Length: 366
Image 1 (tube, rainbow, N blue to C red):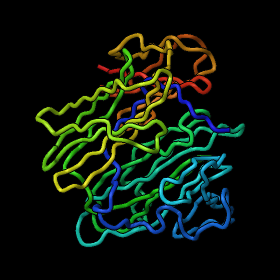
Image 2 (cartoon, rainbow, N blue to C red; image 1 turned 135 degrees about the vertical axis):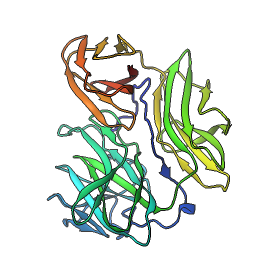
Image 3 (cartoon, rainbow, N blue to C red; image 1 turned 30 degrees about the vertical axis):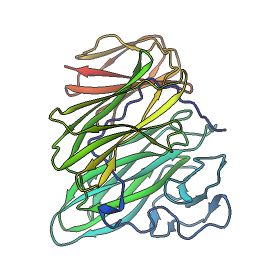
Image 4 (cartoon, rainbow, N blue to C red; image 1 turned 60 degrees about the vertical axis):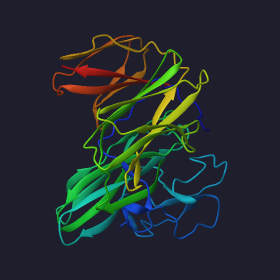
């Protein structure tokens, strides 16, 4: 069964890195990044029964499942992120990989891919999607992407990117994507020497007083043209909302008042340099009909995170600005106090999930 509404008032994604979005970045170093070859014979799930597929290797015992999409595919996104096919896994967490080589000198590398999950399922297990770069032959992780959290009833059937940027000296490496039961993956990429002259420190949004307020912070802006704020009602098809030129300030704002009550909206930034190259930020999901009473009682916080306005049998998760989960705890009453004395000072997101409803709040540790 497909879930179309996400009750989220401020489901915020932070980006230290961005997704490379156009061919001007150069040639993708990965083979078969969209799982388009070989083309599958039928619409829906195609079980190949093998652990290697089109240049990819699956380290899990479960075989590759390649989905050929249709306009109304019932068990996942109706459209692949790249082409007409995407990778699905069933029954267990999986890690797929490809090996690659950096030659000559140290290279600036951008990498990542798109994750999603299918609709609600009785055997669904929560999972985190991420991409990592490992050094060979030691298998040491030398770089990790942002992460996406997926759980039953939330974040389903929408493609969400995991992205990373790093520098790699000459040598042999492994590109690995890890995701969970009923997880999907598509649009993998690995580019050398592909980066914009801008660093996006964060991108956030909030619904209040019948408008969505978007805020982002950009640094190291040089030879940069503008930001283009894009908006969508389905998370797939985006239209331009506003063009924001580069300025001397590091913090930028955009307000959207063209809203419908109790609707879900999706926002992203298209960041364009002076040469016309561009990259996208991650996607923010905002719902204008969330009346959640979930509250952070003491903000800024210090050693204890105090929360209220919840219900039993819920879950809270605290994430840092890179999207890494640093705390997860079950909710058994309307209020909760959690020890955060071990966390560094800075900005965090606390996410409360109850059933199919998720609400997120920002808080600061001083």
